Length: 293
Image (spheres, rainbow, N blue to C red):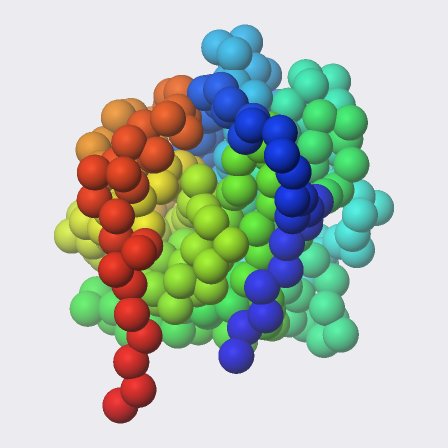
């Protein structure tokens, strides 16, 4: 059973009126990462700065943003946290310089098994401090119709915890790529209330064309929250091809931003007032039940 960790969250009982939350401008960065960490991090700097220039205060990077190559070589780039290597330091420096919350959607983090690092989504606040980390729990072990066999578990250790973090008063749940298919993770996140789901990914072209939009919209509708999904796009080392289409989806399931087929960014204003309106009109949370079979 996963354990829900809440970072920076407090429950206060007060006679004061509830705080009125303002819209938060968010951006999802779409990359075509390879196996050159320095080149990948330079692309990260370029697009994160572009997002900040458009007013984004929360920026999400895709899975494998810093390294997209063989599992064996990936382990050589695994870092201890917080920020002891070039990947972590780049994210810390960028978030501090730009005054934003930056989520590194999936980077190799050292684990007890040197050959199998965690695939970790890291959250750096506007002061450049690591405030949350989520280690991917569902690992992608599949045989594709084109003959490729992908075994993420052969080079990655799985995490155990569901993780949410507060960003500018909004509760943000963290997930990575294949997690999208497992609703129990999002049910755990939603127990404390959920305003935004972040979903960095490297969805394969084969599965993405049929399932990416459907699953992201379903999660937004199911939990009546915003979904911000940053994706890898194009061809990568080892013959991997990813679908792209970084998305931002509103709580009614409408796609409000969809990236083109190239590296870039999508930006939108996440408005908590819309979430409240949807939940008031259709109070699913009050109707939800649990079952034993």
